[in-house]
Amino acid sequence: MIRHRSSTMSSAVVLVSLLCLLAISVIAAHFPLRAWSSGVALGIAAIKAGLVAWYFMHLRDESSLIRVFSLAGVFCLTIMLTLLTTDYSDRHVQRLEAPEHDTPRPVGQRQ
Image (cartoon, rainbow, N blue to C red; front, top):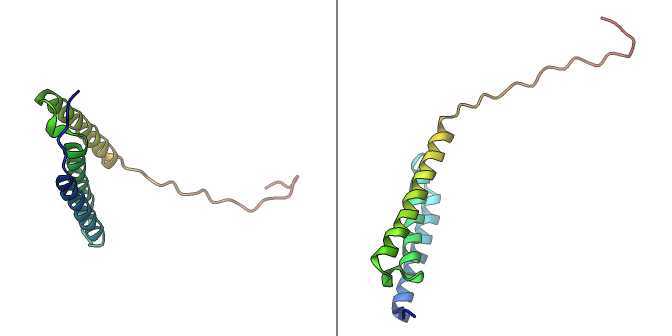
């Protein structure tokens, strides 16, 4: 069984870092960043996910092969999200106008 090194101090530092990143993401949500808002939010989320994986999932104590495979999974996810985003942004949706309805005619009445 692998013993994972863990200390209260490093866990506290990671917790404070995650809380600071949470505060930064909340503050960034209130700024009018327009097109950059999604990128900033995803960047902050990626940093938070990296911290959680490195410290709480013990990637720092694992072999380099496990680290490479975890990065390969992140790389595949990045490719998939990039393709999804480009597909979604390339779609040109045209809104169809609702047809104008005539007033209903009584039954048996012709035009």
